[in-house]
Figure 1 (cartoon, helix red, strand yellow):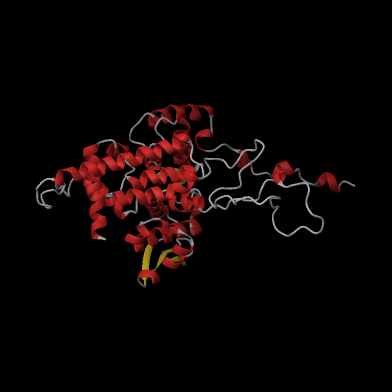
Figure 2: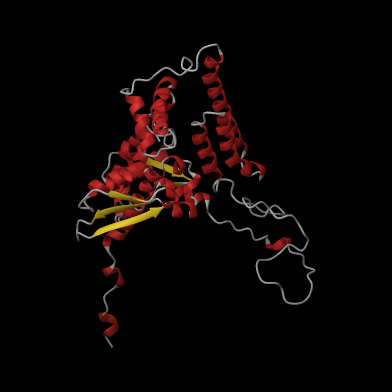
Length: 372
Protein backbone atom coordinates (compact mmCIF):
# COMPACT_ATOMS: atom_id res chain seq x y z
CA UNK A 1 0.00 0.00 0.00
CA UNK A 2 2.90 2.31 0.73
CA UNK A 3 4.76 1.45 -2.47
CA UNK A 4 3.54 4.66 -4.16
CA UNK A 5 4.54 6.76 -1.18
CA UNK A 6 8.07 5.31 -1.22
CA UNK A 7 8.78 6.50 -4.79
CA UNK A 8 11.06 9.53 -4.74
CA UNK A 9 9.66 12.77 -6.08
CA UNK A 10 10.54 13.55 -9.68
CA UNK A 11 11.67 17.03 -8.70
CA UNK A 12 14.33 15.54 -6.40
CA UNK A 13 16.08 13.97 -9.39
CA UNK A 14 15.96 16.92 -11.76
CA UNK A 15 19.48 18.29 -12.29
CA UNK A 16 19.61 21.63 -10.50
CA UNK A 17 21.64 23.21 -13.33
CA UNK A 18 19.08 22.49 -16.07
CA UNK A 19 17.32 25.82 -15.47
CA UNK A 20 20.32 27.68 -14.12
CA UNK A 21 21.14 30.86 -16.07
CA UNK A 22 24.47 30.91 -17.86
CA UNK A 23 26.87 33.54 -19.15
CA UNK A 24 25.86 37.16 -18.78
CA UNK A 25 22.38 36.10 -17.67
CA UNK A 26 23.67 34.50 -14.48
CA UNK A 27 22.78 37.50 -12.32
CA UNK A 28 21.16 40.94 -12.67
CA UNK A 29 24.44 42.67 -11.84
CA UNK A 30 26.32 40.73 -14.51
CA UNK A 31 23.61 41.41 -17.08
CA UNK A 32 23.62 45.14 -16.27
CA UNK A 33 27.40 45.28 -16.63
CA UNK A 34 27.23 43.36 -19.93
CA UNK A 35 24.80 45.92 -21.36
CA UNK A 36 27.26 48.74 -20.64
CA UNK A 37 30.07 46.78 -22.28
CA UNK A 38 27.88 45.91 -25.28
CA UNK A 39 27.12 49.60 -25.80
CA UNK A 40 30.83 50.35 -26.11
CA UNK A 41 31.25 47.69 -28.79
CA UNK A 42 28.13 48.81 -30.68
CA UNK A 43 29.59 52.33 -30.97
CA UNK A 44 33.01 51.11 -32.12
CA UNK A 45 34.31 50.99 -35.70
CA UNK A 46 36.50 47.98 -34.82
CA UNK A 47 33.62 45.50 -35.02
CA UNK A 48 31.89 44.24 -38.22
CA UNK A 49 28.86 46.07 -39.62
CA UNK A 50 26.38 43.60 -38.17
CA UNK A 51 27.48 44.69 -34.67
CA UNK A 52 27.86 48.44 -35.24
CA UNK A 53 24.90 50.28 -33.78
CA UNK A 54 23.22 46.99 -32.83
CA UNK A 55 23.28 46.66 -29.07
CA UNK A 56 21.31 43.37 -28.92
CA UNK A 57 23.74 41.69 -31.34
CA UNK A 58 26.70 42.84 -29.27
CA UNK A 59 25.03 41.64 -26.08
CA UNK A 60 24.48 38.14 -27.50
CA UNK A 61 28.05 38.05 -28.81
CA UNK A 62 29.28 38.95 -25.33
CA UNK A 63 27.30 36.04 -23.91
CA UNK A 64 28.90 33.68 -26.44
CA UNK A 65 32.35 35.03 -25.57
CA UNK A 66 31.63 34.60 -21.85
CA UNK A 67 30.55 30.98 -22.30
CA UNK A 68 33.63 30.25 -24.41
CA UNK A 69 36.04 32.10 -22.12
CA UNK A 70 37.15 34.11 -25.16
CA UNK A 71 38.00 37.76 -25.79
CA UNK A 72 34.77 39.54 -26.91
CA UNK A 73 36.46 41.43 -29.76
CA UNK A 74 37.94 38.19 -31.12
CA UNK A 75 34.49 36.60 -31.09
CA UNK A 76 32.85 39.56 -32.86
CA UNK A 77 35.59 39.71 -35.52
CA UNK A 78 35.03 36.02 -36.34
CA UNK A 79 31.26 35.72 -35.86
CA UNK A 80 29.13 36.32 -38.97
CA UNK A 81 25.34 36.39 -39.35
CA UNK A 82 23.70 34.68 -42.35
CA UNK A 83 19.89 34.70 -42.56
CA UNK A 84 19.63 35.29 -38.83
CA UNK A 85 21.98 32.43 -37.89
CA UNK A 86 25.38 32.98 -36.25
CA UNK A 87 28.33 31.25 -37.91
CA UNK A 88 32.10 31.15 -37.47
CA UNK A 89 34.99 31.96 -39.76
CA UNK A 90 36.64 28.59 -40.46
CA UNK A 91 40.18 29.71 -39.59
CA UNK A 92 38.94 30.69 -36.13
CA UNK A 93 37.33 27.27 -35.68
CA UNK A 94 40.66 25.60 -36.50
CA UNK A 95 42.56 27.87 -34.11
CA UNK A 96 40.12 27.16 -31.28
CA UNK A 97 40.16 23.41 -31.91
CA UNK A 98 43.96 23.25 -32.01
CA UNK A 99 44.30 24.88 -28.58
CA UNK A 100 41.18 23.38 -26.97
CA UNK A 101 42.83 20.20 -25.68
CA UNK A 102 40.28 17.95 -27.40
CA UNK A 103 42.95 16.97 -29.90
CA UNK A 104 46.40 15.92 -28.75
CA UNK A 105 47.89 17.19 -32.01
CA UNK A 106 47.15 19.97 -34.46
CA UNK A 107 44.79 19.32 -37.36
CA UNK A 108 46.72 18.19 -40.43
CA UNK A 109 45.71 17.58 -44.05
CA UNK A 110 46.56 15.10 -46.78
CA UNK A 111 45.76 15.80 -50.44
CA UNK A 112 45.32 13.22 -53.19
CA UNK A 113 44.63 13.54 -56.91
CA UNK A 114 44.29 16.65 -59.03
CA UNK A 115 41.56 18.58 -60.78
CA UNK A 116 38.23 16.77 -60.69
CA UNK A 117 39.80 13.91 -58.70
CA UNK A 118 41.20 16.14 -55.96
CA UNK A 119 40.40 14.95 -52.41
CA UNK A 120 41.59 16.35 -49.07
CA UNK A 121 41.53 14.55 -45.71
CA UNK A 122 41.72 16.42 -42.38
CA UNK A 123 43.03 14.38 -39.44
CA UNK A 124 43.77 14.80 -35.73
CA UNK A 125 44.35 12.56 -32.71
CA UNK A 126 41.83 12.63 -29.84
CA UNK A 127 43.48 13.54 -26.55
CA UNK A 128 41.40 11.22 -24.36
CA UNK A 129 41.76 8.01 -26.39
CA UNK A 130 44.62 8.63 -28.80
CA UNK A 131 42.40 7.58 -31.70
CA UNK A 132 43.22 9.31 -34.98
CA UNK A 133 40.02 10.62 -36.53
CA UNK A 134 39.63 12.07 -40.00
CA UNK A 135 37.16 13.54 -42.48
CA UNK A 136 37.65 13.48 -46.26
CA UNK A 137 36.05 15.79 -48.82
CA UNK A 138 36.50 15.91 -52.59
CA UNK A 139 35.75 18.05 -55.60
CA UNK A 140 33.06 15.53 -56.54
CA UNK A 141 31.38 16.19 -53.19
CA UNK A 142 31.82 19.95 -53.64
CA UNK A 143 30.04 19.86 -57.01
CA UNK A 144 27.27 17.56 -55.79
CA UNK A 145 26.50 19.81 -52.81
CA UNK A 146 26.81 23.07 -54.76
CA UNK A 147 29.91 24.36 -52.96
CA UNK A 148 31.51 25.29 -56.28
CA UNK A 149 29.15 28.26 -56.59
CA UNK A 150 31.95 29.94 -54.68
CA UNK A 151 34.48 31.01 -57.34
CA UNK A 152 37.35 30.21 -54.98
CA UNK A 153 36.83 26.51 -55.75
CA UNK A 154 38.07 27.30 -59.27
CA UNK A 155 41.08 29.38 -58.23
CA UNK A 156 42.17 27.65 -55.01
CA UNK A 157 40.31 24.31 -54.75
CA UNK A 158 42.71 22.55 -52.36
CA UNK A 159 42.63 25.49 -49.96
CA UNK A 160 38.81 25.52 -49.91
CA UNK A 161 38.61 21.75 -49.40
CA UNK A 162 40.98 22.09 -46.44
CA UNK A 163 38.60 24.56 -44.80
CA UNK A 164 35.63 22.27 -45.42
CA UNK A 165 37.28 19.11 -44.12
CA UNK A 166 38.55 20.86 -40.99
CA UNK A 167 35.14 22.39 -40.21
CA UNK A 168 33.45 19.00 -40.59
CA UNK A 169 36.10 17.32 -38.42
CA UNK A 170 35.59 19.86 -35.64
CA UNK A 171 31.80 19.66 -35.80
CA UNK A 172 31.88 15.86 -35.72
CA UNK A 173 34.43 15.28 -32.95
CA UNK A 174 34.61 18.55 -31.00
CA UNK A 175 31.31 20.44 -31.44
CA UNK A 176 31.51 21.76 -27.88
CA UNK A 177 34.58 23.81 -28.79
CA UNK A 178 32.44 26.14 -30.96
CA UNK A 179 29.17 25.68 -29.01
CA UNK A 180 27.80 23.66 -31.93
CA UNK A 181 27.70 26.71 -34.22
CA UNK A 182 28.39 26.00 -37.90
CA UNK A 183 30.92 27.60 -40.21
CA UNK A 184 29.99 30.48 -42.52
CA UNK A 185 30.21 28.31 -45.64
CA UNK A 186 27.93 25.63 -44.17
CA UNK A 187 25.21 28.15 -43.27
CA UNK A 188 25.45 29.92 -46.64
CA UNK A 189 25.08 26.64 -48.54
CA UNK A 190 22.16 25.53 -46.39
CA UNK A 191 20.42 28.89 -46.92
CA UNK A 192 20.87 28.89 -50.70
CA UNK A 193 19.72 25.30 -51.13
CA UNK A 194 16.85 25.32 -48.64
CA UNK A 195 13.82 23.45 -50.11
CA UNK A 196 10.70 25.43 -50.92
CA UNK A 197 7.05 24.41 -50.71
CA UNK A 198 5.55 25.07 -54.14
CA UNK A 199 2.20 23.39 -53.42
CA UNK A 200 -0.64 25.76 -54.51
CA UNK A 201 -2.81 27.13 -51.74
CA UNK A 202 -5.93 25.09 -51.01
CA UNK A 203 -8.40 27.87 -51.78
CA UNK A 204 -7.30 28.17 -55.43
CA UNK A 205 -8.71 24.73 -56.24
CA UNK A 206 -12.02 24.80 -58.06
CA UNK A 207 -14.99 23.31 -56.24
CA UNK A 208 -16.32 21.97 -59.55
CA UNK A 209 -13.93 19.07 -60.07
CA UNK A 210 -14.76 16.01 -62.13
CA UNK A 211 -15.96 12.97 -60.27
CA UNK A 212 -13.70 9.99 -59.81
CA UNK A 213 -10.49 9.32 -57.98
CA UNK A 214 -8.17 12.27 -57.64
CA UNK A 215 -4.68 11.99 -59.11
CA UNK A 216 -1.82 11.43 -56.70
CA UNK A 217 0.49 14.22 -55.73
CA UNK A 218 -0.14 17.75 -54.43
CA UNK A 219 -3.37 19.67 -55.19
CA UNK A 220 -3.49 21.17 -58.68
CA UNK A 221 -5.03 24.32 -60.04
CA UNK A 222 -8.35 23.74 -61.79
CA UNK A 223 -7.47 26.14 -64.62
CA UNK A 224 -4.21 25.90 -66.48
CA UNK A 225 -1.89 28.64 -65.30
CA UNK A 226 1.81 29.17 -65.92
CA UNK A 227 3.94 27.60 -63.22
CA UNK A 228 5.77 30.02 -60.91
CA UNK A 229 9.56 30.30 -61.33
CA UNK A 230 11.64 27.68 -59.52
CA UNK A 231 13.05 30.35 -57.22
CA UNK A 232 9.59 31.52 -56.15
CA UNK A 233 6.78 29.63 -54.48
CA UNK A 234 3.22 29.88 -55.87
CA UNK A 235 1.73 33.37 -55.34
CA UNK A 236 -0.82 33.76 -52.60
CA UNK A 237 -4.36 34.87 -53.45
CA UNK A 238 -7.10 36.68 -51.56
CA UNK A 239 -4.65 38.61 -49.42
CA UNK A 240 -2.71 35.56 -48.30
CA UNK A 241 0.89 36.32 -47.38
CA UNK A 242 3.54 34.88 -49.70
CA UNK A 243 6.98 33.64 -48.66
CA UNK A 244 8.88 35.90 -46.32
CA UNK A 245 11.13 38.22 -48.39
CA UNK A 246 13.97 37.86 -45.90
CA UNK A 247 14.15 34.06 -46.07
CA UNK A 248 17.25 33.99 -48.27
CA UNK A 249 17.17 37.18 -50.32
CA UNK A 250 19.18 39.02 -47.68
CA UNK A 251 22.02 36.53 -47.95
CA UNK A 252 21.91 36.84 -51.77
CA UNK A 253 22.11 40.64 -51.59
CA UNK A 254 24.89 40.52 -49.00
CA UNK A 255 26.84 38.06 -51.16
CA UNK A 256 26.39 40.36 -54.18
CA UNK A 257 27.74 43.34 -52.23
CA UNK A 258 30.74 41.26 -51.17
CA UNK A 259 31.50 39.80 -54.62
CA UNK A 260 31.05 43.01 -56.58
CA UNK A 261 33.74 44.71 -54.46
CA UNK A 262 36.26 42.35 -56.06
CA UNK A 263 35.02 42.94 -59.63
CA UNK A 264 37.71 44.16 -62.01
CA UNK A 265 35.77 44.41 -65.29
CA UNK A 266 32.25 45.08 -66.50
CA UNK A 267 31.95 41.35 -67.22
CA UNK A 268 32.70 40.59 -63.57
CA UNK A 269 29.88 42.92 -62.51
CA UNK A 270 27.52 41.25 -64.98
CA UNK A 271 28.37 37.84 -63.51
CA UNK A 272 27.55 39.14 -60.03
CA UNK A 273 24.26 40.63 -61.26
CA UNK A 274 23.29 37.33 -62.88
CA UNK A 275 23.02 35.75 -59.42
CA UNK A 276 20.56 38.43 -58.26
CA UNK A 277 18.51 38.79 -61.45
CA UNK A 278 16.18 35.79 -60.80
CA UNK A 279 15.21 37.27 -57.41
CA UNK A 280 14.60 40.71 -58.93
CA UNK A 281 12.53 39.32 -61.80
CA UNK A 282 10.47 37.29 -59.35
CA UNK A 283 9.84 40.52 -57.38
CA UNK A 284 11.36 39.01 -54.24
CA UNK A 285 13.68 41.91 -53.48
CA UNK A 286 12.44 44.74 -51.33
CA UNK A 287 12.89 48.32 -52.46
CA UNK A 288 15.79 48.75 -50.01
CA UNK A 289 17.46 45.58 -51.29
CA UNK A 290 17.11 46.68 -54.93
CA UNK A 291 18.65 50.02 -54.00
CA UNK A 292 21.56 48.29 -52.29
CA UNK A 293 22.22 46.17 -55.37
CA UNK A 294 22.11 49.22 -57.65
CA UNK A 295 24.38 51.25 -55.35
CA UNK A 296 26.92 48.43 -55.05
CA UNK A 297 27.00 47.87 -58.82
CA UNK A 298 27.31 51.60 -59.52
CA UNK A 299 30.14 51.94 -57.00
CA UNK A 300 31.97 49.04 -58.65
CA UNK A 301 31.57 50.62 -62.11
CA UNK A 302 32.85 53.97 -60.84
CA UNK A 303 35.84 52.24 -59.24
CA UNK A 304 36.65 50.33 -62.44
CA UNK A 305 36.21 53.47 -64.53
CA UNK A 306 38.45 55.49 -62.24
CA UNK A 307 41.17 52.86 -62.32
CA UNK A 308 41.03 52.71 -66.15
CA UNK A 309 41.23 56.47 -66.79
CA UNK A 310 44.98 56.91 -66.14
CA UNK A 311 45.73 54.26 -68.78
CA UNK A 312 43.86 56.04 -71.58
CA UNK A 313 46.71 58.40 -72.46
CA UNK A 314 49.74 57.68 -74.55
CA UNK A 315 51.53 56.09 -71.60
CA UNK A 316 52.87 52.62 -71.92
CA UNK A 317 50.84 49.84 -70.27
CA UNK A 318 53.56 49.40 -67.67
CA UNK A 319 53.39 53.10 -66.79
CA UNK A 320 49.61 52.86 -66.34
CA UNK A 321 49.91 50.25 -63.61
CA UNK A 322 48.79 51.21 -60.15
CA UNK A 323 51.54 52.43 -57.79
CA UNK A 324 53.46 49.61 -56.24
CA UNK A 325 52.64 48.83 -52.63
CA UNK A 326 55.25 47.93 -50.07
CA UNK A 327 54.76 44.18 -49.38
CA UNK A 328 55.78 44.84 -45.77
CA UNK A 329 52.90 47.26 -45.26
CA UNK A 330 50.56 45.93 -42.48
CA UNK A 331 47.42 46.41 -44.60
CA UNK A 332 49.06 44.65 -47.57
CA UNK A 333 49.92 41.69 -45.31
CA UNK A 334 46.36 41.57 -43.99
CA UNK A 335 45.06 41.35 -47.57
CA UNK A 336 47.45 38.46 -48.26
CA UNK A 337 46.30 36.65 -45.10
CA UNK A 338 42.64 37.19 -45.99
CA UNK A 339 43.10 35.71 -49.47
CA UNK A 340 44.99 32.71 -48.15
CA UNK A 341 42.32 32.14 -45.51
CA UNK A 342 39.64 32.01 -48.20
CA UNK A 343 37.86 35.24 -47.24
CA UNK A 344 35.64 36.80 -49.89
CA UNK A 345 35.92 40.40 -48.75
CA UNK A 346 37.64 42.68 -46.27
CA UNK A 347 36.02 42.22 -42.84
CA UNK A 348 37.99 45.00 -41.10
CA UNK A 349 35.76 48.08 -41.10
CA UNK A 350 38.55 50.55 -40.45
CA UNK A 351 40.33 49.41 -43.63
CA UNK A 352 37.17 49.31 -45.79
CA UNK A 353 36.27 52.87 -44.87
CA UNK A 354 39.74 54.22 -45.64
CA UNK A 355 40.30 54.30 -49.42
CA UNK A 356 44.10 54.36 -49.16
CA UNK A 357 44.24 51.50 -46.67
CA UNK A 358 41.72 49.46 -48.66
CA UNK A 359 43.84 49.89 -51.79
CA UNK A 360 46.83 48.40 -49.96
CA UNK A 361 44.71 45.58 -48.56
CA UNK A 362 43.31 44.78 -52.01
CA UNK A 363 46.78 44.84 -53.53
CA UNK A 364 47.83 42.14 -51.08
CA UNK A 365 44.58 40.22 -51.68
CA UNK A 366 45.04 40.33 -55.48
CA UNK A 367 48.69 39.32 -55.25
CA UNK A 368 47.67 35.92 -53.83
CA UNK A 369 45.11 35.38 -56.62
CA UNK A 370 47.77 36.30 -59.19
CA UNK A 371 50.09 33.70 -57.72
CA UNK A 372 47.33 31.05 -57.95
